[in-house]
Length: 172
Image (tube, rainbow, N blue to C red; front, side, top):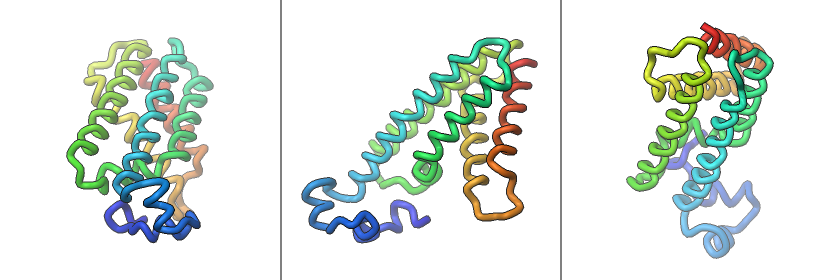
């Protein structure tokens, strides 16, 4: 994975089977604009997944939690590579970085609030930190599953572990 700074427009247009002229004339003014478009699509997608956490009702059951975890992993299947790399290798554009950070912060806060509301016992942790922690756990677990190491846990084993942790968090 080369990231934003290591990829050239030719690296993008070759596999996409479009000419550089087509890339610039019909699609994007530069690769930064492409990155912004990818980021916009990614950050539009995640709030819906987080909002679906509200569909769970207390006390949370494992089947409903697993369904939500499956949705989050499906989101990561579509956007995970971008999510994993965008924070460390985004274009050097202050407005873009600020918007990305604001979106991620809002999403984490929303998830933390939903977790806190659903918990059988009020959590003593800050809800923003809780949301960040759960999102990081999901994203890192997804990345581990994508790795090439044969000793890594299966996707289902990772989802089962996440489900158990969330179940215990919510049910005390």
